[in-house]
Image 1 (cartoon, rainbow, N blue to C red):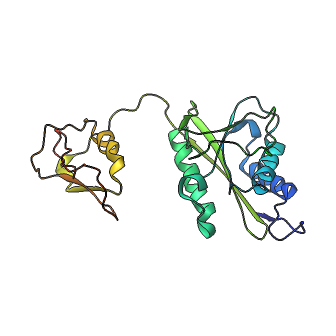
Image 2: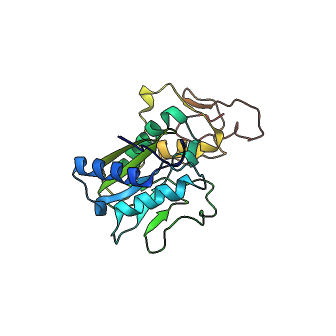
Image 3: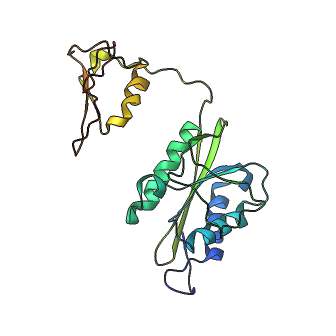
Amino acid sequence: VNQDGRSATLTAPNGVAQQACIRESMREAGVVASQITVAECHGTGTALGDPIEVGALRGVMEPRETPLLTTSAKSNIGHQEACAGLIGLIKCCLMVMSSQCAPNCHLRLLNPHLDVDGFPAFFASEISDTRLNSNYAGVSSFGFSGTNARADVWSQCKVGPRKAFRIDLEKVDQIQVRCPITMGLIEHLTGEPITNTFRARKKYRADVLRDEFAPYDISAYAYEGGFRYR
């Protein structure tokens, strides 16, 4: 953690201070730039802040030959203000554990002020595999008043085809998921496709909870494993 010190305005980022923060974090972690596969950026989407942050990242990560997968949790769940850095850290842990980079949701066009010519920054627009068994990810969080924070995260993951996880139905009474469009989650957890042929009510069922009514037509979906999806 460090501080911008004097800058143009209270909210103007200081690229030099950001570079110093990233370098010191990597030094303490014993990590070199070429080992970092994913960069979880502060990434507020502002015209001024993003170019400064990417410039600072480039200043530390060059030279490199491999792509730097670049993403921000704010594109996934918005700006959580006081806990934004913690959200980024949790996301980093999940990414390195799965050897994947989460996408920048709704990214259609890069900020033209980003200085990325010749710099292999890859702004993911879909889930991207790192294809590595061992991954380092760095997460940055830059406060409103000039406080800069950085953490470097490492995890090892067995890369390869994932086997379907089977739920022990004798130990499960109910599964709840928050959104009906995540129907695929039930298929993933059970390894069984959802079909339209099994409509009887069973002992085990998965409920979908919603805050508003919508015509998702999900009440008839079920699968042979025993859950009723309603």
